[in-house]
Amino acid sequence: MRYTEFGKTGFRVSSLGFGAMNLPGVPLEQAREALNYALDHGINYIDTAAGYRNSEEIIGECISHRRSEYFLATKTNKRSYKEAKEEIERSLDRMKTDVIDLLQMHYVNYVHEYKTLMEEDGAYYAALEMKEKGYVRHIGITGHRPELLAKWIAKGQYDQVLFHLNLAQPFALKELIPELTRMNMGKVAMKPLSGGFIQPVSKAIRYPYSQDVHVTISGMISVDEVKENLAAQAEEVSQAEREELEQLASELSGHNCRRCNYCSCPIGVTIPDIMISSQVREVLGLLPKGNGFYDRQREKITSCADYEPCKEKPLCEEKCPYHLPMQSVVQAAAGYYDKLRA
Image 1: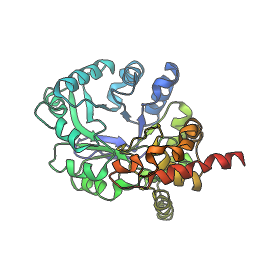
Image 2: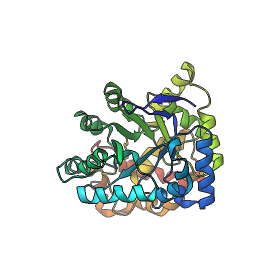
Image 3: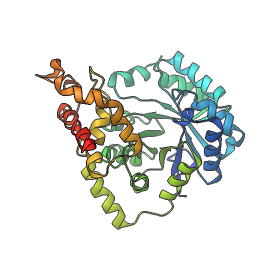
Image 4: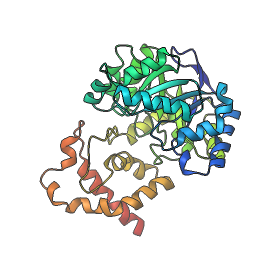
């Protein structure tokens, strides 16, 4: 396991972090085994959020007795001082801890959201107050707009950023990661499999591992998944492999979608998932979870071409800050089902 200094925090963190978002979907004993196996084998960064169902309670129940062994990161998606402070207090109670190592402003994608949480009665000042009282050690921010995050951290008010970084979404490499490095901030990559689309798992994990980040958060739900992720980081990345991964990322990221979710589809198509998986599907094929997504979205995807209000001008494309051709990608995805029948 590789360990590095986590920016200016004074902690040394493992290169693989345990993402606990999906633990509420498995039996408690399975979650307990996975978390403890991770700690036993050197993972010392645990990531969760108040909004991940009962994930915080699971962490409190399963590993709070080993609290000194891990760096604990959680999040609040509240924007007001009052709501955020109440949520932070609940998080402390749920995770059975006296202190949160990293409290992150969660899922900040819009300028107006950022301005709201940074106002005097905003969520940031609740986190700052809890830090001054000793309940929070560091404050971070998460989001899906790397170019905006690079601007928002410029005043030095944050210690860390959590961002997408995978073979299909390498966009943080351009502005955000260099700025974080310059400011000596914590760099945490999430979604290495892009939500279950990128395979093989080993290659997916090794891409962010090859980049200038401190931790790659991988959502794990079993001992076997922990073992698989640990194995993917067992060896350092050679220059030849790095070049191969960079070439693949260039090919898979041609969709240019950041998953900012500005788009919304009136018939319920999950556009970012289709955009991001479009090239992955053709080049690498999909993991079972990715295939399951397409099974669930089948009716909606195949209905896109017939939705009358979007015939002249797609409603989703009007909202995209990157002006992406989403309608054509969604309609092309309908061909996926024809291949399945062939």
